[in-house]
Length: 85
Image 1 (tube, rainbow, N blue to C red):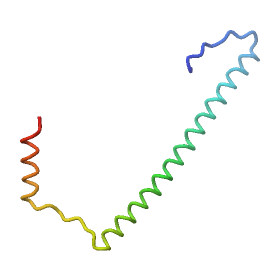
Image 2: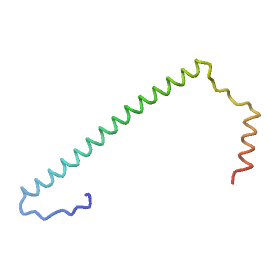
Image 3: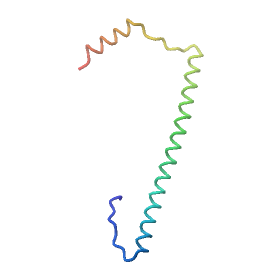
Image 4: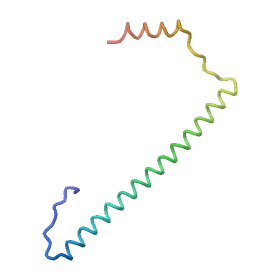
């Protein structure tokens, strides 16, 4: 537990207080991590929506990506196999 040694307790009340404090510490850490995860997920969704909108805008404005021809794919594969270790 965080590299901490469990102390010797002089009473049951002292031990109970120790474990309660430790559990509250871990609960707080869990809640902070959960909040950060939710914030990250929300940011990721926003970024994904923004990128999707940019992609749609680029496709609608005449910018498009042409699919390579089968000959081009063959050349790429040949080059890959020639120069791969």
